[in-house]
Length: 204
Picture 1: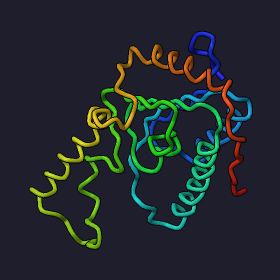
Picture 2: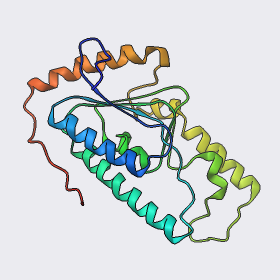
Picture 3: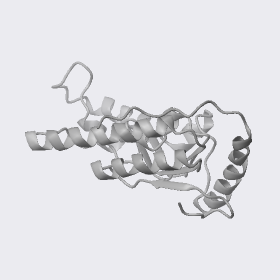
Picture 4: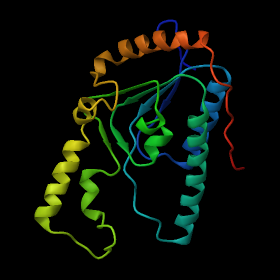
């Protein structure tokens, strides 16, 4: 539990790319520990787009184990009864953004760096995604270009903040100052009457 922000004790969960089985399991245990000790959690999110589906039995088995560990971490994040602050420093793609307390999990504060991207898929991989109901569709080039441009525009940090989907865009050099201010705000939450802490149901 690094005390990085003045006198505030905070647990930091950071991701850089795809979350593996071991990383998800470790994150689940860490989040539950922070919740039990009433320590706020800071998520630094840079998740990667989904990779290709498994093509062999061994890959499918490994993929299944990884999803099980990710479900454990997702349950821990959802049931954590402590303040949660999320900073998207890079990509915020797909279901792995839920593990890092993305927008769908309603963190107490959600900020984005100017380079952040929030979308289900990366526009660079959009050409590999088939149209719904037509697996053999390769797509018209002009139509595909328009869709990629639209996705590129609507996944930007400024598009998100302009519609109040988050708490704003912050500069990297101001991140420490903003987090300190957020911790000072959520510190008041410990004096409020909160609902009983819920334990996640985790498959063993």
